[in-house]
Length: 110
Image 1 (cartoon, rainbow, N blue to C red):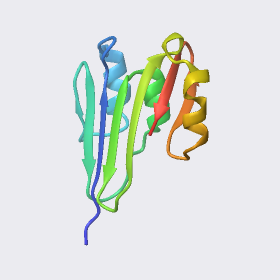
Image 2: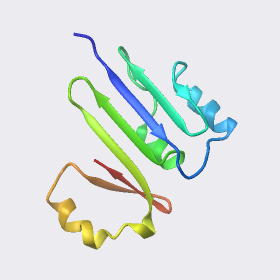
Image 3: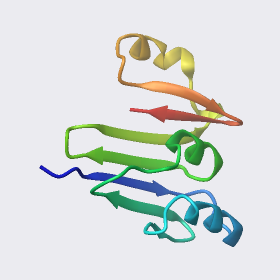
Image 4: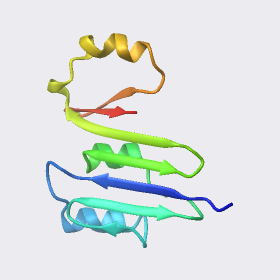
C-alpha cells in the first residue's frame, strides 16, 4: 500500500510576498505556492517544513491528513479573541486540542 500525505496552508490576513514564496519554494520544489496558499501532497518522502513554524510566520489555516488516519487542523487567531478561561475546561478534558502562543496570536491545533 502506498503512502499519501496532504498539506495545505492558507493565508487570510495578508498575502505572501515574493521573498516569502521563495523561502517556501526551498521547502518543496513541487508545491503549489500562490500569494495566499501553499499546497502539496506526498506519496513518498515527507514534508521538510515545520507546520508550527509556517503557521506562526506566514499562514492562518493549516490542514493535514494522511491515508493512515492522521489528521490535523490548525487555526491562527488574534490572542485578544481567545478567552482561555472560557475554553480551559474544554482543553483540560481532551488531549486532542492544544493552544500555542505565536506573538500576538494563538494557534489552535486540533
